[in-house]
Length: 72
Image 1 (tube, helix red, strand yellow):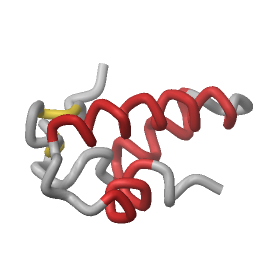
Image 2 (cartoon, rainbow, N blue to C red):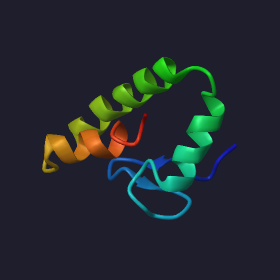
Image 3 (tube, rainbow, N blue to C red):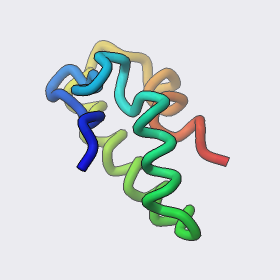
Image 4 (spheres, one colour):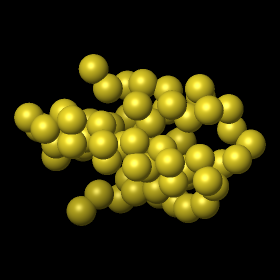
C-alpha cells in the first residue's frame, strides 16, 4: 500500500506533500495499471472530477494537466 495517497480536500500527497498525484504516485499508478492505459485514464478522470469539486479556485487547464497531462 502506498503512502502517496491524496489528502482531501486539498489534494496534496500524504507521502511527500506535493500536489497529488505526485511523481512517485504517477510511477506507482503506471505500474499498477500496466497494460491498461484506458483504465488508468478513466481512474484519473474520475479523480479529476472529484478534485475539481474541492479545488474550485484552480483553473480547469491546470487540473487537467495535473491529473491527465502526464499520461501518454
